[in-house]
Amino acid sequence: MVITAQLPQPREGFRPGGPGSGRRRAMLWLCPFLLTFAVCGYGLTDALLGRDELVTWDVVGRDTGRILAMLRNVDAVHGTYYLLMHGWVAVFGDSVVSLRLPSLLSVAGAAAVVSLLGDRLFGYRAGILAGILLALVPAVSRYGQEARGYAVVMLAVALATLLLLRALDEPRSIRRWAAYALGLAFAGLLHLIALSVVLAHACLLAARARADRSLWWKSALVLVTAAVCVAPVAVLGRSQVRRQLYWVPEPGGWELVSLVRDAFASVLCAGVLITLALLARSPRRAPLVLCGTWALLPPVLVWAASHGEVSYFRDVYVLFTLPAWALLAGAGLAAACRSWKGAVALTVALGVLALPDQRQMRQPFEHDAPVPLDYAAAAGVVERLHRPGDAVVYDRADTWQLDGGVRYYLPRALRMRDVFRARTAAQIDDLYTPECAVPARCLRGERRIWLLTQGPGFPFGAIAPAQANALQAGYSVSMSRQVTGMTVSLLERRNGK
Image 1 (tube, rainbow, N blue to C red):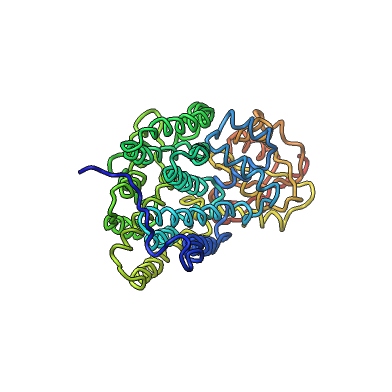
Image 2 (tube, one colour):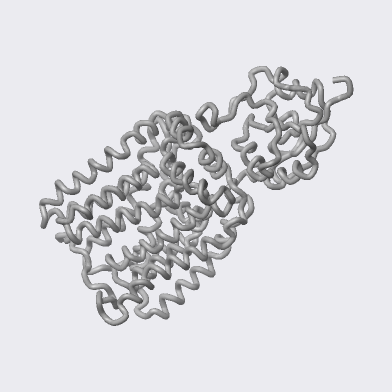
């Protein structure tokens, strides 16, 4: 059977220029946008900032030159997101709402773009259902409420796919091909693994090139342009990958199946959307091939690439495949339910059944799961009992961003000398804080020192032995309080020391 790549021209229930077409067209993208914004925005500040979000806060607060200098050493693959957020924070501040709002707007935008894509590929009803289904996926809420770039990547990939279809509408339009090239490059600059969507795009382009051979050189030019744009990030990222992903385990065979499931953050939603996707129908094969390869090939590619020197096997890295699953599920739901009432009823039922998973995404420590750390409570203890001249020691032995978490939730005007910090991470253009080589020499006779450590128990046992010895030689614990995942201790200098 010959696969034709001609895209559906008529849209179900929509004729451009017809009566009410403007309103229906607006409803197509506006309803999913507003629904996603409402669903994912609910409880936006319920969860404390997680470790990765604290990295975002730390980095974007530096000046542009410092950010660029840091990217030469670490985290280059997130550099585009950091630079965008640096500009955002400069205008809107660094509150929890401000830090997370770009991600929320991105998932809402992704739902709107998915609806536009679904309209083009499977018809009006399938399109609007696809956007609504995407809004109900718990992972969309999870990363729509996180100050990291994964939600923006999802939007960028969906938008690049829409720009490809627009370019194929008018293959002679240089402007449309340029827009697609820029969209693809932007997705790659946000996250290199997102460029694996090119495999799905290539399937569509190859099929269309049978009828229009000029598409070969046009698509090749687009890919070369995108590759040139992302090459510096790819080179830097490759040199930094061992340092950043050393902790990710190599996956086995079952993990490939679980990766697709975990990307939804819900077994229920994964099962329902995948089942609906299997029901997807289209008079043309191209939409099914495009969405199917978009949904399946990136996880397979990530799994295969994770059997080398470094593993890239994280479900969040393939979050951008969720729009493809939503498109197929929307088409399947539209095919299974011939009436709007039936489709709406099933969608509402899915939303109700997914409520437990949605609530889980908004738990206070979800962004630091499975090791909860209550930075806000620890900061509250320090703020209530703080005195001028107090200093602080943070547990950095095995804890990532404990110091950043407490500093974020402390009032900005409350400043304490970080006793064992040699220099700030920003000063050395890195993410990690260097500490004093000889801790005893870093003490300056402070009368009171706050010691913040992970976990319960003896606080001196959580920090480096040399630091513990230096503190114990002159200080004793006058107060110690437990908060979730942490111990807040107050050390006071002994008389005569």
